[in-house]
Length: 503
Length: 95
Image (cartoon, rainbow over all chains, first blue to last red; front, side):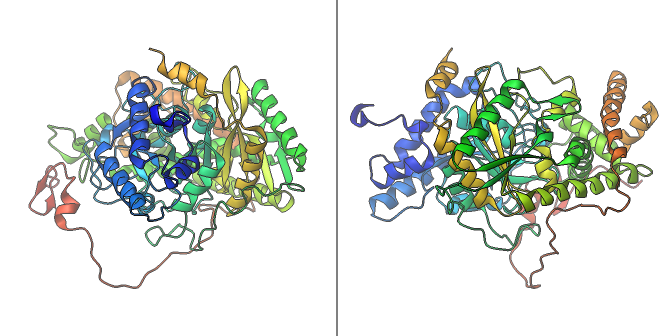
């Protein structure tokens, strides 16, 4: 690389490594951004992480950061760092589609709170990433723009729904990214793409300007190359917001506070239901990688014990009642009246709405609206929605009991590694079963993080850490200790290079 | 409780969705296969359990009722598929 012969390829850097190079003036924000766009030009035709690039805005922000550095001003830890933004977060003046035809032409009149906070932190948003339509899916195959690809194997899915954000980080098309997680949509794609993904406690991050799927479950969080970057991104986006009444009013902690602290004596529970349940068995290769990870944690002084969360086995059915019920209500607003797509040539209002929704929504979205409308309809409400909400209490109580005894729970993030494109599109239940390890966490609202823990069949496996409500600092401490002991996050860059650059 | 084709058509109407002939059949089948998995819930004893609709016990957040800037009519209408003056325009509702 000419003058910087000892310099790594800039697009492969973590945010904290890039920050060091920016403050020592070894690189400029301009060079960093150019490297990221060059990378996107080289690989995104194959990976398809992005649905929209924001080159003009990004150039302007990085120029401001370089001017600050040149003037001798200090910069924040994420200032000038290129970020990929899931296209479910509202950006003022920039189209926001949720990867749905029904939002065609929609340009938000305001920024999501997290977008505003990223701007305040000087983060450079590179573009908006692909996702399953309205975040409903586990593979990005439900996107109106076509699927993203897994950078480890282009014939496989990157996971979902935040698949584009995870593939962007996996393929080094941004340094950091934001995703959203309703039933695993940050952690499962992070696991599949060999990167770090964190879902904060429900209420830790404002949902203002996040296009709603299931309001009692949705949460925004980071997708990054390592645990430190996840903590730094949490510092930028977390904390109270008067625009979201479900946002926790207490100030957020410094999420980097416990990084590097010893985990000697930390009590880790390993709930057996996350390895084997009726109808689902975690793949042997995945279970092996997780058990090896537990031995690493033990070797660092943690006390590891098997435990049980018996009601977790109800998570999947209640998720597929509660989330569609909330979605059927949230998605009632897409009727062709106030924004987005309207079907042309209709004479009366009912057919206008029906035609708009028929043409605007994809199959999975329709399936969930149907399921949710049915679960809430007269005569079935008690049997489905009320029953599910009561069972949700049992699951929450299981987690409360576990955290009275353990500091952290550790499980696989997903029962398998990334599956081939098309393998599950025709069987919704098989697709849903893939979320069996992540859904219980959203049901309880507790925070969790997925970090890479090795490979099965040559594809990355995710290790999931879970802690009690509001205890993200312990979550990050445990994940960081594991990551530093193993170095999986310093990924096989050569392998990614081979796959994504191949014509 | 298996869903009938008529029920699926009724739910579609409530949802303002429409399905073609083959689609209704396929949907009825898929929804029934999903509902089958829900029967497991009957094993959970919830007779003494209250519902969780929200995981974090918080009350409404209220602010003082003070006037402050908001969207202009033009901003609010900028995404309207059709507008007429300061209104969203839709097909005639009342004859």
